[in-house]
Image (cartoon, rainbow, N blue to C red; front, top):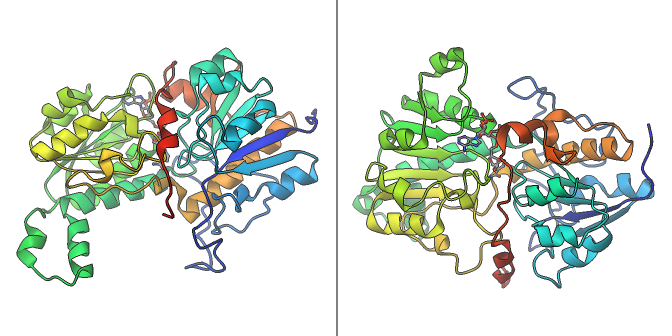
Length: 407
Ligand code: NDP
C-alpha cells in the first residue's frame, strides 16, 4: 500500500447560506440507514469529521474533509467561484491533482480546462451524474472519474414524486393564492386533476427510476418504463410494469413521464419538438435527471401551446441557470433549483462517500467498482453500464452569465 505524497485537492461547492452557516437545524438528527435498496453498502470511510444532518455541501461545510486532508499534509482549496477564465476554480486548477465537484453547482471540467490541468488524475463527483466532466477528454488523458453511486438516488425519487403531484394537482398556484390572501376555489382547481388511474412512465429504470416506480405504485396508476436493459420479470410483475422498447412508444401512452437516465451523447436533447409532439396533449414531464436531456426552447413552446400541461424538475443547463433562462418564467412549471439530491440527509451520504474514495485513492487502494465512471482510459464500473463515450459539456460557459444579485 503506497500512500500518495502531498496532493492538491480542489473542491467546488455552492456558496454558504445568505445569512451565514446555520447555528441550529430544523431536526436534531437524520435516520441511520443500514444499506441501499439493492443491498449495496453505504459509504465506509475509516472515520468522518462531520455531524450527519449538518450543512456540508456549501463552502464552509467543505464536505467535512478539511481536517482529514490537512492533517495528512495535503492542500485543500474550496471555492464557489467556478465560471469564467478569471474564476478561482480555473486559476487553482493549473496545479490541482484532484478535483471534487457537485452536480448542483458543477465545476465544469471541459476539454480546454482539462488541458490546463496537467497534474489532474482524479475527478470526484460529490453526488451522482458526472456529465459536467468531458468524459471523452478524461478518458484520453487517463483521468479517473468517480461518483458516489446510490448516495442521493432515493432523495431524487422522493423529489420527483413531489413534483409529479405538484404538477397534476397544480399545487404551486394554490399555495400562491393562499399566501396572497385569496380564496377563489374555481381559480385554484381549474387545472387540478387526480393522478389515480393515469399512465405514468419513466425513461430509465435504474436506481432512481425504479425507486420512483415503487413509490408511485400505491397511487393506483398504470406504470410503464423504457431502458436499455430490461428489469427482471419478478420486478415487472410485482409493480405491474409495461416495458417499452423505445421512448417513443412509452411517451405515446403516458400522461406523466419522469426522466431518470444520465446525460450522455445518446440522451442529449432526447425530448425535442418532434418527440414532444408525439405525447398526448396535456401530458406532464418531470425531469430530475439533467436539463440538457430536454431541448430548452421546445419545452417552452410546448407549455405555451398547451401540448404539455406542466413541466417540473430541478435540473437546468447550464448551472447556475442564467437569470434570463426561459424555464424560470415559462407557464405551468414547478421548477426548483438543483436541490433534489442535496438534502441534508443526502449530503451526509455523499460527504462520507467522497471521504471513502479519497481514503482509497490517497492510500493506493482501489476505489469500489460501483463508484467508477472512467478509469484506465475507458468507461468503467457504473460508467460502463450507464454512460456512452463522448462529451456533454458543450455550452457550459454560459453559466458565467448568472449573477446572484443578493439572491
Ligand atoms: P443509474 O445508473 O442507476 O440509472 C441510470 C439508468 O439510465 C440505467 O438503468 C441506464 O440503463 C439508463 N439509461 C442510460 N442511457 C439510456 C438511454 N439512452 N435510454 C434509456 N435508458 C438509459 O443512475 P441513477 O438512477 O442513480 O441516476 C440517474 C441520473 O439521475 C444520473 O445520471 C444523474 O444525471 C441524475 N441524478 C440527478 C440528481 C439530482 O439531484 N437531480 C441526483 C442524482 C442523480 P442501463 O444501465 O440499463 O444501460
